[in-house]
Length: 161
Image 1: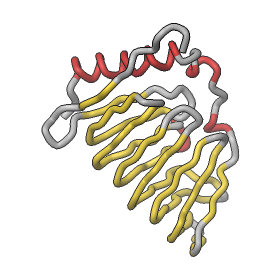
Image 2: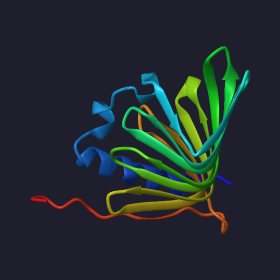
Image 3: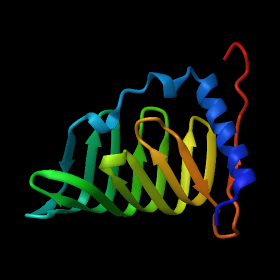
Image 4: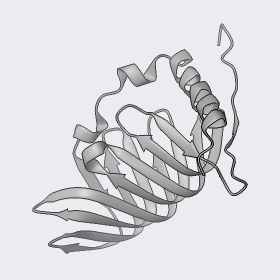
């Protein structure tokens, strides 16, 4: 369930904190254009993708995705989607996102994180059940949690800080 009005307010507040924090969204490079590096304790390559297990980490630009297991789908040396499960943790230079599962679609630079999602930016925190996040722009769209609502705590930026 997407809560439109509170979501709009929460995302607007998060966007405001981004703007106050130095116009981060305007200075982002396209992360999705960067090469994808992978690492894991064990892995398997297939003609249609790959499977990684144990201490899995994928990096692209300044962003990092960690999980218990990651599956990559694609063919011909191209990755189209990456699915991460178990202890998902996605970190950018300005945000961190935690959840139970994530699907990164390379073609539209979007990662969808589901299951007990926590988005953190500095001291600001937003929680819900589903987050759609654009890795290039930093735009976030959160859907409600178990009680049908998103929740957040936002700290105002004080002048001189």
